[in-house]
Image 1 (cartoon, helix red, strand yellow):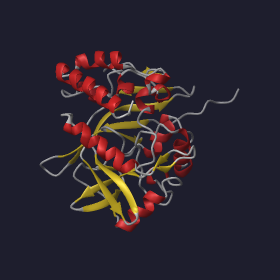
Image 2: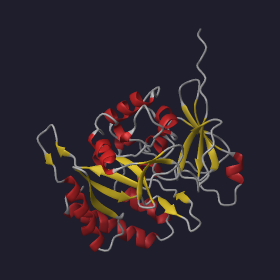
Image 3: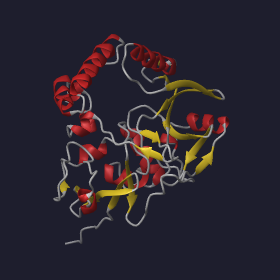
Length: 309
């Protein structure tokens, strides 16, 4: 009988503090355990509502939805990313080992022995407009803007092609190491293979954001930008915050699939994902449940009116 393969643990950090470890067991199952120092910290919090704080590890089904939902939804994009970075597979452990330095929310995933940079230490390469244009043009072959020859590694969830960059002191920067990104950049989708024309996708998304904002809901700050001949929607990340002392912080957040332990394959209600009733129930536990539930219901009405359901 052959020996089972052993895997190195993947350390999870939140703004420089060790939270716990993600591990592929020799059986192939994925497990997660909180670090004891994190459990003892006075300001501790769970990585997800679906993974409450406890000393015992979590393994298998409860673990995967939390971390799988940090990755692109689109399987072909995942496969291209895995090929680019030499990942062993397209599962959360394999991909986050390679591209988990900058994810949605505050979590960072680093190999055992590697430490995150200081929060006030920003590293990267300044990009000109033509370099950004080239990056956007090549997203179909360099998913998320990740290239073999450099150190730029990010993970952004969702189905659409996109990338993320750091904007600092009036300059666009492609981060290296564990430096965060501050903006998501989404190019025009164009015409799909099924004949659907989405060449106005940037203008459409911008209009929808402004429409929803004018109905009194908070939306991400966004603008339409042109990088040479490439039009894109530039969206300021709501999960990043510049502190007064100059540090760039990552803000903890999760989506409803993570909170309800729903895998990305069932993200949408039509595929068995969470519906209005389940989400309204989760919002009962928020700091401002009445306002949050009202905003969520208003958002659903607006999404129906603009055809975004």
